[in-house]
Image (cartoon, rainbow, N blue to C red; front, top):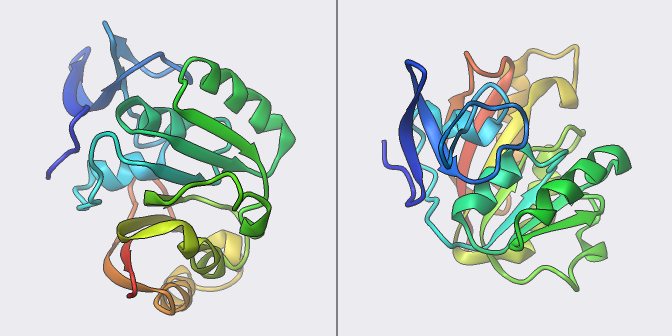
Length: 209
């Protein structure tokens, strides 16, 4: 598994995990300046932990959809460049603002990822689009936000089956969402995020040219 510069495997009290350097934000283990990137708390962390090739590199520009309180976005900003963090709910956005105060390259946006026109005037072209939204139409969200992604960039999406249809078989849901993503992207890899996240699928894709 290749990790981007700024992300390393580090020992925390006998447990080895991926980690970044930065201020701790959610009770994660620390060792000096290193903070554990807990894959149980982060879908992107789980993608890295299970060995998916994400194409992540240091200092790249990122758009994070579904940033919540900033658990994963904080790690992305630790090793990345400008990181635009979109969150729809006001309560977690307040926590996200606190996280951003300690990271001058993290820009919180209280916006709806289903309406990219509301933040298109703020977000510059990015190298990576990270998506972790709990809503129906996750494939459409990825397609709508394709406009921000550079031609050589990556979509890194965590698909939540239960957010699409709580009654459907997760594998059927994944097939449908990946098909929707394929309208705007070439899907490079998919992998279950178990055992870290049940009924979730990690997707790596490149924008269609």
